[in-house]
Length: 81
Ligand SMILES: [Zn+2]
Image 1 (spheres, rainbow, N blue to C red):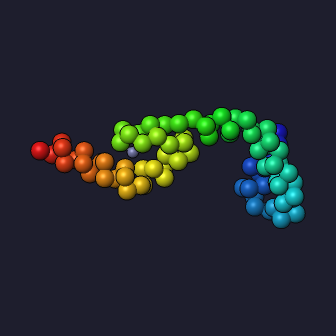
Image 2 (image 1 turned 180 degrees about the vertical axis):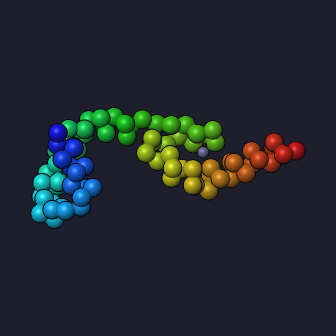
């Protein structure tokens, strides 16, 4: 119910400023409701093929890292021989 109301406001893009406080509360509440879930997810670790371990939310960042790129480059060289 609350979510569909929110969607309507975004689509129409009206009254947003007027309801800013409402949205603020809405997101705050949603965060509070999901806090434990977010915490658990953020504690999950992934181990990449390159050997590095990192938090689930840092996957994209890791894939852009020099360490990972070097690993990929090394893999390419091995397979191209
Ligand atoms: Zn990696």
